[in-house]
Image 1 (cartoon, rainbow, N blue to C red):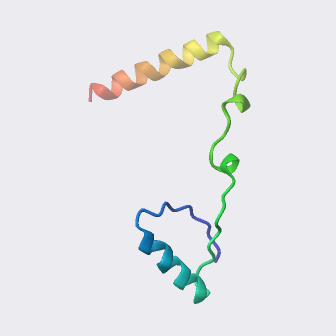
Image 2: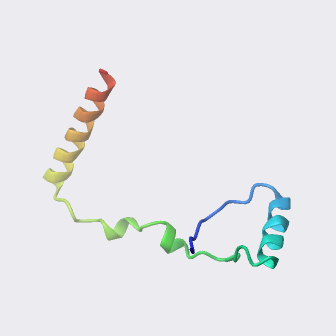
Image 3: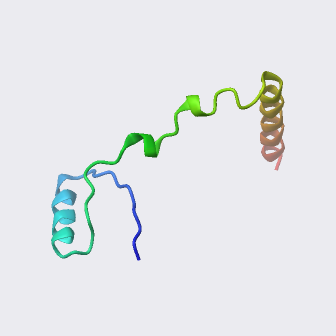
Amino acid sequence: MQDTVIIEITNPKAKDLLTHLEELHWIKVLNKVPKESLILPKKKFRGILSKKQGLDLKEHIQTSRNEWGDI
């Protein structure tokens, strides 16, 4: 089984722990993750919806949120 996860190290000691786990061949540390694989650029979606479709969608979302607020 091979899964890839992205973690944020909040304590410097965690990096040492990850290094030890890598030495045991339990994990493989990938130092660099390309940012473009994490965040989709806005330009990719620009122009997909017309202005009217966008306004209709915005209105639908607001209506849905208001309905959930009434519960």
